[in-house]
Length: 211
Image (cartoon, rainbow, N blue to C red; front, side):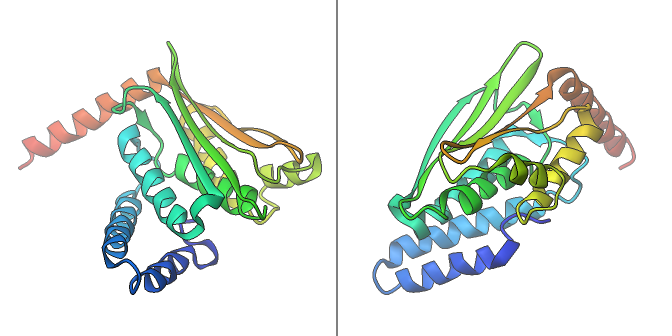
């Protein structure tokens, strides 16, 4: 499922800009540029079986969250903890859909809103990626339905999980509790990143030779 598409989220962003335009034209222009960056970034990922640099995936996350913060204001708080080389390779459209699920299904159902924390930690052999929210959380039954793609917010996570299995033989790890929120984690092995980077460089080299 393409990001920022379910239930007309992009139209909600446009409605926010329309409402803001008479009050703050400058802010509206900033948000239009943010939406443009977001859509351009998401359309760039034509082949989800390839890898992208962490910088590009996080730019997508940041644009999405900036648009949502304009809509929800103080109800949405965001923390970033990025302790990794931004040129490391990750599967595209993995972090952003998890963040979107956290906002839509974890934080926004709460009247007071809540906080989303995105963490990327570089370990010796892999990147550890986690998206944590202090939202509504899930019961064990709901969590199982999400893992199997039977819940409304489970289809995207199921697709991400399938791609991780195909690319790295790893899976999403979901820890949730109705009293404290949800954490979704996954890791990306560095060895796979090096192999993928070499493959991409070889493809570019072959392309240059054929010109």
